[in-house]
Length: 94
Image 1 (cartoon, rainbow, N blue to C red):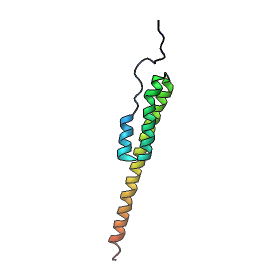
Image 2: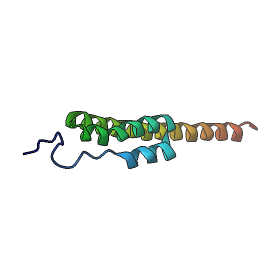
Image 3: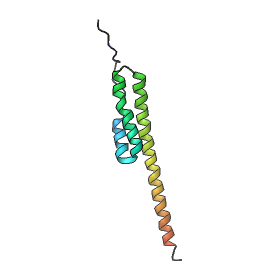
């Protein structure tokens, strides 16, 4: 009987789609970290490191979420800034 070091079942979701979307649409630095983490999932799984693969998948998801939150905060501040500038310009003549 041949023994293999392969884990049973499918590997965890590597969240690569979310990492790419975060990189393109949200926050480039956080998205890049998320892509790096997500690409390690399959490699770790193939080596039999199921815990490491799950941790890498969780880290990839975390960085993608942080990137989306950071982008949301930047957009809110951007809108507030231009609303304040707009109101300041509207009352400048009074």
